[in-house]
Image 1: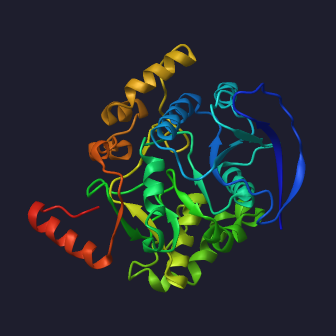
Image 2 (image 1 turned 90 degrees about the horizontal axis):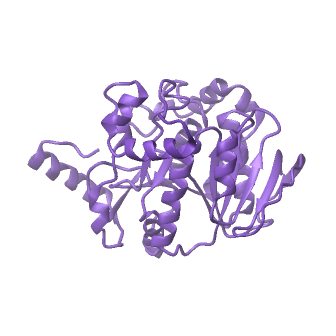
Image 3 (image 1 turned 135 degrees about the vertical axis):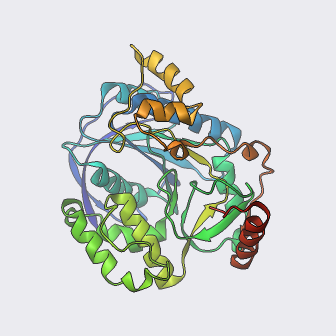
Length: 350
């Protein structure tokens, strides 16, 4: 049982909106109030990016009728801007809005959101942050994996983040967590992540990273454990360590596509404080942003940084002709594929 403090606003798409703000302590118990699966959307101050992110989600839902019932929960950090709240209110699907009564911070806002989302989820939660675009084939990609049935290995996370090279029909076992539009397995979350979703971690993230590293540093040299210091201590860094724990302890891997199904447009924000979107109104800024993200070089210019175009790569054109099927690239196949690629192109597969 894990208490959480939240404010709640629930809306059904297409009906009149009414606000109900509550400050309550919930006792979350797995299996109670399940409603299918959850799409979690953390928000704060990127209204224009959120608008595009929702537009891309809408296109993906229209492109493919997802087999799972999906219900969206927005978790809005304290001080979320009016423009963001307006964009949320116009969300075209059923949703719930959780607002914070005080400043939570990035990690606590998302982790507390996970506690609510997984308490209601049947088997998984998908997370799409406000500066992430999912490809129109995203839900089709997830369904294609689930269609593999018993052939699909047990996993901790299904990444949307993947390589820049390879085939759109292939997925491989890996152990790098991609925080852009991941699907997180409920069993993995409850066993490995939930025990750390508490103030002990939120208030001293460095100590938590030290604790998590302690018993796994012996696997660092072999590459099975990625971390040897306390950098990357926000929730993505926590989960990235824990997927290694699950792989080492139980042989449970992340599944990663060779061609990514997401795109990062967050060229300004916490890690890019110098960026901005030109425009004198919300609509004008959305229009300008739509044009800016067509070229990663222009994004980098607006971010005020150099040499990071790869962070904002466009969707791979091969997705436009993807046949809708997915296959697992086995470890021995992966080794051969990497060798052939290196011999024929001189490039390593990333």
